[in-house]
Length: 140
Image 1 (cartoon, rainbow, N blue to C red):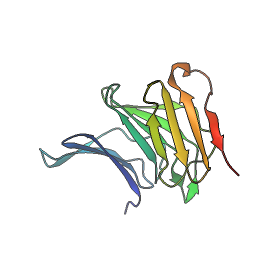
Image 2 (image 1 turned 120 degrees about the vertical axis):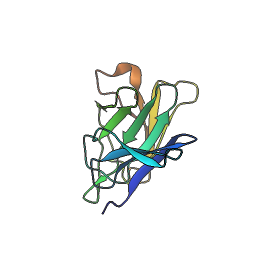
Image 3 (image 1 turned 180 degrees about the horizontal axis):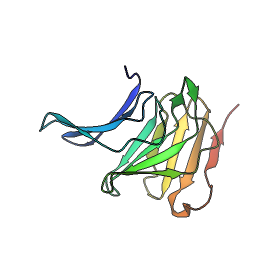
């Protein structure tokens, strides 16, 4: 049985779910009252940090846990293509549902923060070919 599944609303009637120590992903449509299966994600993780970009129609899945250990894996799901893509790993291992967001004034900057790393990292999505997560805050 899946535990610690990640869920995020992608509009008023649609819920995206993934993880729970499984690669399974699905959308629940509250109007149709039915599950719509999606492509499996690349990794079986739980407690993933997620962010839905409504302009790009992408769901970013950062960190999470595998077998109870925090990981630094980063992927996004393109809703229009029904396809998963990798982006470079973070420096820190962000477990326990890290917070993920895009900078409000610079939408190309994806950011993640977690108590597991006691830091915030920033990734410039314009530079997809190279590793450029930058740790911008680190205490302890």
